[in-house]
Length: 268
Image (cartoon, rainbow, N blue to C red; front, side):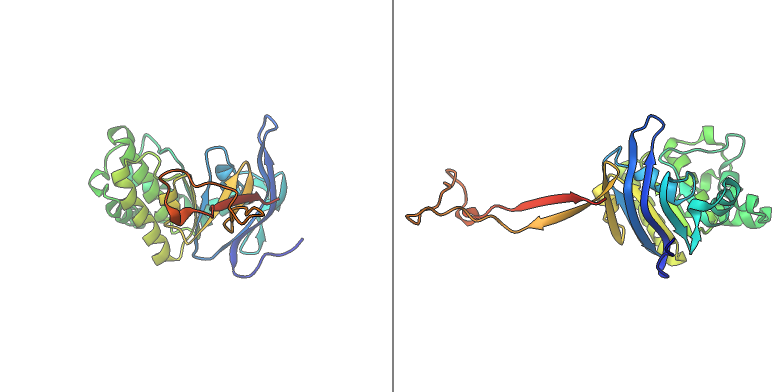
């Protein structure tokens, strides 16, 4: 068993995972995440983004492969140890807001802190701070059914940030938000991560969201995708010196003779 590099807070090697119906979700994915880095995991729906985050966070165990957090082997931990790890060191944001209906907004945001043993007053202060930063401070005493879906999602984001996690896993965190709201929430999320030294794994299929990250890992059909830019293809020249391909009528002469190419490779 090989220990991860010292500068990686999260490290995974050759992760494999299959759904209950036998279909592959991850097929040999390896990656490292540096401390304080914002890493976007991009790809279309069904590419394995959520499964990768669930394996890295200890929500599920990979069926093969290794996951390390700060040199601790997450893949060999039992359920209780992984649960404590998620409670004490990790934060999680789902694509859809999930709140306790009996609690108001600030109580929902403070709940993980109180479960850690933080006093009610201190937990309330931290929760209210993040609710204000996410523009839902005025709704702090409202129950979830009194909030709009976008407001409920902001409460969920405040809940994840209030605990100051070492690693924040954000699975399409702005999916329920209107486009006008997404930029503000993402700026708050990334600014908080950088100022507090939080490592972020951000699953998204949106290129603009991925562009906010320090680095992007792309998935397709459960494998990492590496895009290779190939050199232009020159037109074939016949024996008499004439080019073998004709320029379409009205096409620009500047584009004659070359054709841009790109290819992608799937890593095992």
